[in-house]
Length: 251
Image (cartoon, rainbow, N blue to C red; front, side):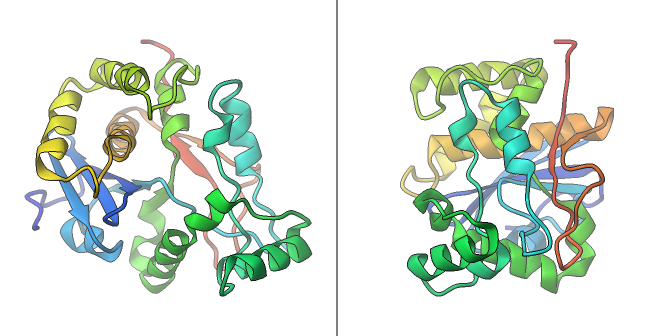
């Protein structure tokens, strides 16, 4: 797929899915595209000139010298309902271990903590993102780690969503909120459902990619917030450890 967006006046929200990745692009005027990608790098051949890419994946990995604290900070913002949606990722050395058991041993040795199976299951995508950023420095300043539930809370006056998005009422709660900010939200979701099989892209994946894109759309116009240590930490490769979101208290 080739994008019709030709300049830097658009943003891309990216979420992992069974197929690989699903991306929603929205330009400054509210035009949108939705696409599915088997590999992370094809997102950037399709959308090479976005002002920002907001991705629901880890950017910046901990080491013996650099501890990631943003998961703790994110959970504070998601109390009491959505704290379990934030997984603490393995440190860099553990991410590149050959299997779960070896990774747990390495992570305990470096951080004093084990690794949940949920966190280990996203390691292939963590590696895919990490490798892309390290090999493509020109994109490094435009790729931002984000988190859908942090973004929803930001849009909801700082209040986390009540229901899980895996439930019908949870998806409705989120889509109704997105419609307030971006009236084409349901059209984007419906287009995604027409284009992609559910075994490749779940409803949750579409909703998550959509909130990331809308967060970018609003943030470009009104400014962003970040969850991070102060000062912002960098990992050993110079990647900033922070989560981007948009905070609105006027709706």
